[in-house]
Length: 311
Image (cartoon, rainbow, N blue to C red):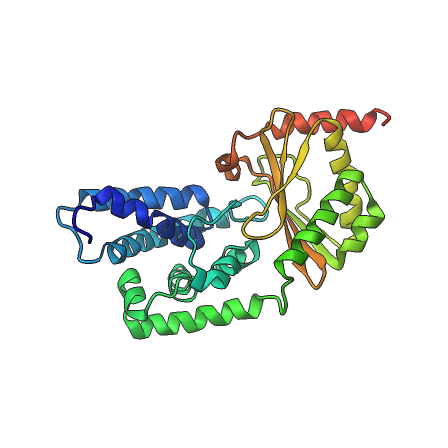
């Protein structure tokens, strides 16, 4: 601890790291923010200053996140339809030495792979593989021996490696393809869209049973292209705007109603020069951190009315 540095200053300096750890363990912006706030309350309420503030706070936020994840697992098992992480606009923690690990681990695909791990495996993988913590630090954070943490890390890495794509497109290539994708989407260009989609592309929607369902799961370039072009041009006719935006370090877009409220987001997985997966997050509970949320049912009614009117 530096002389003259207050608890608040110490905590705020480490807040980006704490949030980033919690988000990767939980897959939820709101739950990660709550975990960070609870960590502050425990730090602020401690009568003594720890020898290492970073170690104390990292351990605290990790253990809180593991407890939250264990209870969240029950809710996710009862969730209506597919469950996706809450979309993240930007990762507040940056470390040039670990930029590749940080970028890869925050993608929707990686977070869904992390969902397959046990809470302890997930925490160990995040601390060790993503943030480069030593095994002594990992062990202290999760309350297990170093040997046990090494075993957890090996199992977690095996699961993660088995589910990763063999090759990911460069960032510039992803952005260029996404730009063409959203241009074709706005124009209702079925042929143009189909050319950008992998033959076995999948489109999956997470509405949580709380919104009109765009698509729980549609597979195949022809079906996905026709679904997209049957809906999004009509949404444009009722003043829904498409704002291309990087989400979880990958190309995507936020769709807003005429009042600027968030209606849905689309996140794209790009591989081998084609869109492999399209994930639509529609559940309003997962969009509030992006701004005021639109009334999806009202927009849906307008779209249906527009469908019945000639263009």
